[in-house]
Length: 124
Image 1: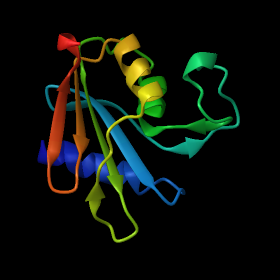
Image 2: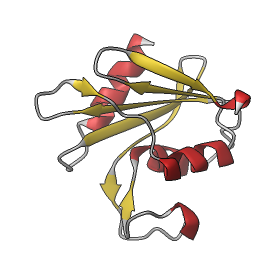
Image 3: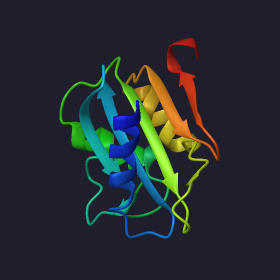
């Protein structure tokens, strides 16, 4: 999990936003896709009900769109970095959570102030 966490942090640092969020989708420690929060010129691949802000793409959704393959049953790790470079709470927003369950991701891992937390989507 440490190598996945490092990759998610590297992805978060690519963001130009004040709140840097990075996400990796993985299956058995193999990274399938990655994404960070960004502003897109086009959101035509995203269903309207999953668009919260015009042209804004959250890291979780960016990773799902970048996967370009079936990600059913895989896991997702999302981290958020504050201005001091520390991990802070990065639980997916309701819109991202509904999109994650829509594509049938199995488990969600997200950073908190001191550890990683897990949500098992199969039990929802």
